[in-house]
Length: 439
Image (cartoon, rainbow, N blue to C red):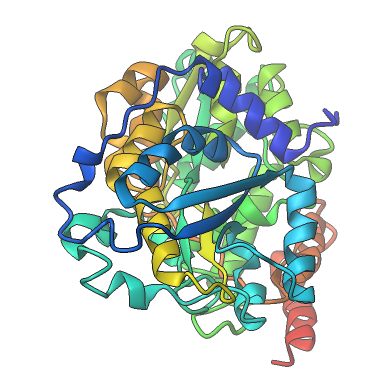
């Protein structure tokens, strides 16, 4: 069932399939006039140079043509470098460790934040946001960022160091024809989702749902856990895997997996996509980035049958997991104020709105509220993602998080396969985490 795609390849394919390729986009248009209402002197660091390092990514491709406008606005020269993602993810920490990193601003992933903060590789930027000489707070409007994007700024209880530049959430994707034929309303809660999955599977048409059961199951699972009031780590970063609410959510996830295709414990996001495209499954609750491929007539024969809805609610409401790429400031830069102007510009309302029109959907609520987006992607998709992101959360992380998720995966897989109970599985996983974290 493996497609051989990396997540990066899949994302780029989804971007292109949705008409989001930058080469096919209309000319991007952000002007100095869009920034004149900000009560700051954009030219106060004229003549300086800001060195920026980005990974090759749709956001990088979309913002690069806009950088001359920043240079015109501020008089700051941008020295932009970009690397393929695989090279980027190894070279950046290696250079930071060696003390040879030469960039002022660079792209970061939210789950790297605790490690980067612990090593003092990134600068705390709240002081620049709060400085009226550098930032017009009302114009920048921090509250326009989705809650998950605000949480990304301090990921893992780190200093305020990361600004979100992209946004991705979980959605309910479903087969409209199957639900209609069986008289099933679009599920709004997990109980309704489970009942729908059961009815579809028992009809013999196809599996009622597909879920991740492989190594990356922790990402969509967190949306279920959060919606039940549970967590992996609590607000103090103490292990919460064996809390009753978390266990209840694990059981719901395992119950849903009973109505998934065989072999679901090997499924990640690419297998979910394939299961939907091949009519093996009728629903999933996973990443919004999958949706464009399912409706692209060049890639899908079922595009007109695909529906989309906000993430279902649990006992504590709908709290989808979310994913953000961020930009951060190097702690070693001598150009911090000028670097902040670049970060502020890149995450501002005018730039985020323009990038959204180019197809790179961002972390600001206002960037989604544009008629052009509903024309390009359809109102159902835009409204569903926007609604979901308003209550979406981020997986809490610490320095060891990505090394610990394997114990969680094993516990969930054993629960899915009825080799143990959710309660016993999470007690075992919690024990592994507490030992590793010295809790």
